Length: 109
Length: 114
Image 1 (tube, chains in turn orange, green):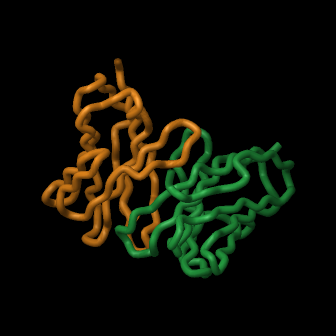
Image 2: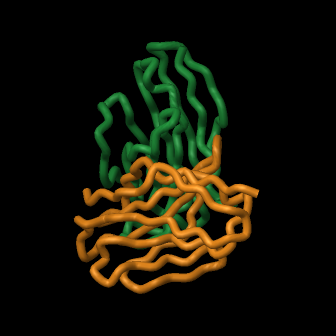
């Protein structure tokens, strides 16, 4: 399975944009890029996913590099509720997810 | 609210016992996966069921088994419990197994083995 690399932790100020990077240099042509976040003692929450084009939804934006070897999750205005562990995951055939360690996002008021 | 419900939310078992965890997938979702998440770790894929058949399996021993029913709900069974089986067990469902379908997780079942 293709793997992803994320920073262990990041810090942001409330109401500022946050850019969470993810490297996936061994991604295959059919792998989708998924982002989930997880609060303590809760199940992972779907954030966004995409294949090649940039994607936007009410929660976030996903910017995918032209060569697809990296992507960035963009939270447009961080709130305290956005503090969580963010996972960047690739899914191939069968749509099974292989989680890595994720990025712990801390949001300062 | 993802529509994926799991039961029980918490349970305590003794080493050597057996446990069954249950999951109701989101309405219309025919694909269910189970994940194990140890404290401080990311979730690890156990197996996936698609239309009542096991469709893929992670690196877990045979004492981890499952079922999917005609209504697409699912069970995870673990036999001969070990202390290291203590974890959050997550169920996830999707419309089908095609790559790119959105996958929704439940809140999990916390299992403690003593």
